[in-house]
Structure formats: C-alpha cells, structure tokens
Image (cartoon, rainbow, N blue to C red; front, top):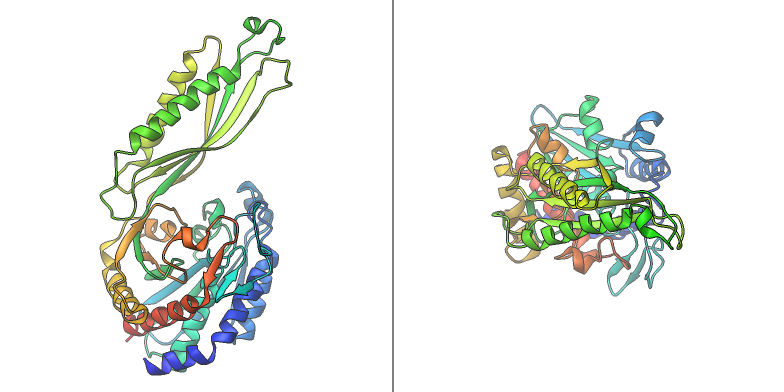
Amino acid sequence: MSALAAFLDAHRPGMEAFLAALVRVPSDNPPGDCAPHAARAADLLTGLGFTVERHSVPEAVVRAHGMVSCTNLIVRRRFGPGPTIALNAHGDVVPPGLGWSHDPYGAEVVDGWMYGRGAAVSKSDFATYAFALLALEAAGAPHVGTVELHFTYDEETGGEIGPAWLLREGLTHPDMVISAGFSYAVVTAHNGCLHMEVTVDGRSAHAAKPTTGVDALEAATAALSALYAERHRLAAHVSSVPGVGAPQVTVGLIAGGINTNVVPDRITFRLDRRITPDEDAEDVERDLRQRIAAAVAAVPGASVTMRRVLLARPLVELPAARPLVIALCRNATRVMGEPVPASGVPLYTDARHYAAAGIPCVLYGAGPRTIEEANAHRADERLPLIELRRAAEVVALTLRDLLA
C-alpha cells in the first residue's frame, strides 16, 4: 500500500500533464471525428511504456452511427493465468457550448481544479486507469490475471461502436470491468435511455386562411403537452435503487415550419426518456408511442411517424459483481477518509454493454462528489486534481486485491 501511494505521489505531475494533453485535443461528439484524439492518446500511452492496440472501426459502420471517425484502444498487461479485469473510459465528449470562463480545451488549473471539456467526463479516467496500472506494477506486479485498458470513443452516441463493438468483434471478453465514474460513489446501477424522433405532418396553407390547411405545430403542441404531463406523472415513480431517482422525459430538439406567414406542414422533435432499472424498456417505448399518437389524432388531418434513435437498457448489478463492489468500497473508504457507498445514478453510460454481455461492471473513477460540482456537460467542466491521484490509488489497490 505504501509503495503504491509513493509511486502515485512521485508521478502526480506526470499524471496531471497526461490529462492536460488529452483535454487539449478536441474530441467533440457530435461531430464525432475522434480518431485524432485516439492517435494522441495512443502516443501518450506508448510514452508511458504501454503497448497499444489501435482498433479502427470501419468507416461505413462509423457513419451509420452518426460519427466521422472512431478508433478504440486496448492495452493488455498479462501477469499470469487468472481473471481479466478491464478498465474502460471514453474519450469522446459533448461539444463545449456557451458560457465558459476558461478555454474549454486549455486544461487551465485554478485553485487545484483543472478546467476543460472532458476533464471530468471522462478523459480523467484515461489517466486514473493508466497510472493505477503503472502503480500496481511498480509496487510488485501480481502473479495472476490480466489487466486491460479499454479507451473507447462513442459513449456520447450510445457505445455501439465502442465497448459493444469490441465485444462483438471478439477483441476482448473480460471477467469484470471498472468503468469511468466519480470518486465518492461506487455505481452499481444506472438508468437506461430511449431517444425517439417524432415527425408530425400537416398541410401548409396561407396564414391569412389557416383553416384551409392542417397545422402541424398545433398537433405537435398537443403531443408536447402530453409528454410534459407525463413528466409530471413520472415524478412520483421513484426507483427502488438509491440514487437513481424518478424517470424523466425531456424534449431536446425541435425544428419545422416554412415561413412566418405559412401554416407549418411539418414539425420534428427528439425526446429523451430516462428508464429506471425498475422499468421495462419495451413497455416504456410502447406507452410513449401510444400517448403521442393519441395526442396528434386529436387534430383532424394531422399524422405522426416515430423513429427509435437509441434504446439503452438500464445497468443493473450482476451477482458476480459483488467482490468488485466490496473491494472498491473498502479501498475508496480508506483512501477518501469517509464511507464510500455503492449506489445508482440517473445517468446512462456505455458500461451497460459489458453487463448485457454477462460481464460484471461497476463505475468508479476520478471526480468530485456530484456531476453538478464537476459541471459535467455544462460550461466550465472541471476536476479537483487531488481526486485524480486518490482515484488512481483506489483502483490500483482494488486490482491488487482482486488479482492477489
């Protein structure tokens, strides 16, 4: 334990420089041109002494998933026969948006916090996991098992060509996985998510005689009202999993119309429905479709089509994950100096792809106490650098325990 801590203390400046170098290379998704970031990450990992496998996803597959380029990275350290533990973090990030007081790609450090898009979610855990593995080896490598680093690039669009693609292609099949998270909770469950595109069609007409057309916006407004009523109804259905909360509905995009003086003939919007571990994803989708169709049908002449964009099922804890959860909670509690419990979160991540393949997976990594404190997916995303050092120690100790 002291050797691990001493290694991480000595290499803390290098760990922070490693993260800063990753933050300074944009990897916004969309548009999802992430191969350049993967190339930079691979070079940095090679500089740490790792052998890096670069797995480029075929261009046609990448474009079918709405991205420009995607290269996933795998590092393997084989110590002997035994279990394989994978550490997974994603390098793609949401675009910066407005309102930043620091350069979103500057990796500026102020009062011990690093600012930049991806500093907390989840380029930080490229550093957490890489240096945890280095610390494990420096303190005396185990004689059993394998540790793999999985650095993937499509979490913000669902993970289908990240972890799911690595598993489908037979490039890996670990026995258990730690995926990117925050330092003060070991996450064993999270929400799923349904993204749907809804297109409401009417018939255009001159604004001087709107009744000669069919107002698509009027029909879409009825559908939106039904969705917001559903949001209020769902607030009472809190999940039985601590930390997950109630299901949510959000309409995040809307477009349509021809001109100010024309009755709109088409309105399109996209919705996000968070699905708790207590719910059945197919039932949720069926119910939403019925509510939207009924609302649009109330406007004579209007029609609606609905397209599923994404269906991400919730992450639930597999029984085989218990040893991993126990080890992480024990080590995090010791390193953080306070109880670190297992809990759920209302987010959804691509960790679910491992669980869907029957592989126990939990979330743990560098970060403050909450996504709000980290400004995750908001302006001025930030990470307390002391937590980067601490999280690396927790992960290294956990690897030591599981491979002992």
